[in-house]
Image (cartoon, rainbow, N blue to C red; front, side, top):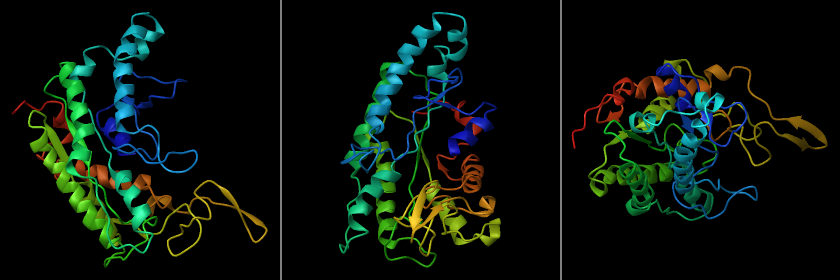
Length: 304
């Protein structure tokens, strides 16, 4: 969702999904994200349950194919030329990577919901390997120095995490792992000295929102807007948009009355309002290291 605000901030339409071949316009960019995607190879994938088969390495394959095939299509002229990016855009573009949340969730599903008290986080090398491939691809393609990668840190205040909570309701154990994960992301600068990496601290922004919802006009910060059952309006009975049968009665799981003042959408994702809150703060550069605003990201000088 934050990607939509980023494109709007740049005066561009929303990005079309790479796998959406109907009515798409890739002339200004492309979105390779999929639901439940991970940075590392997932142990189990849907539709049988689990995570997306399109993890980061696969998305990189898709990017490489798109770069080549888009120019072949563009060479046909006509509408093909209008809907595909110009070749130089690949060198001049801003690339953002917001991933890692589900890698932490993999461990939490196994551990946080069980009687175990320890949780393993992705190691620095596990994070570095897929990221190393990102920069290898860009270097091989002679991408320009304006390329910027943003890695948004994870956070752990969502209803799908059931564990011992802190003062505002976030899982203590999972937060500790998030902090370790964030340290591993920062370690990427040492592992990849030739890459220009911008660390985006989304965790702090979301934690501030959930800690002081009234200050920012939000209500019921940890309760899902679209869900069913339990303290947080979230349970295994069904997910947002489904129709479930409870005691012989069909119940449609729909949205709350005022999603614009809620932070959690479906127990797993933020609402549009919360994403807008996050974007407004990270786009200024106040929560990035180095502190580079989004508008300046494409004009950044190479300081390596």
